[in-house]
Length: 142
Image (cartoon, rainbow, N blue to C red; front, side):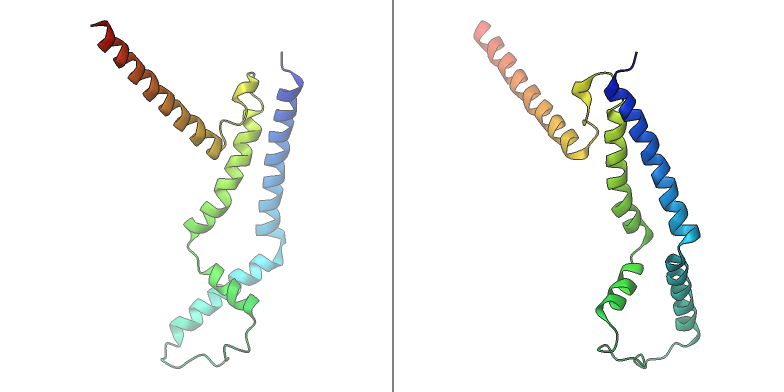
């Protein structure tokens, strides 16, 4: 039998996945901004290949706004950087919602990276202390 927290956890997981699919669909299918940015990037790459010269660009740096410069520099980041930037927080939220579906309330949140690291470090320190105490007891007994 599931309790209220588990039911809300499963509802949260379902809604989170549904919102993720809707966001990805909107970004790649409906939004024209992504299409324009992708098309501009392809045209710029094709233009750079056809006209390779040592001349500076025709537009001066002061005429372009800082937003355009920022967008072009962010678009030049490799795919793995973008995947890391979006995938780590996405998975953290998903794993937290998934951990809410577990039967034991003490294990909720162990999937979150900082909490997981803290638990693992704490277990290692406790294990080291216990092994030191056991070795001391063995020395005293002999």
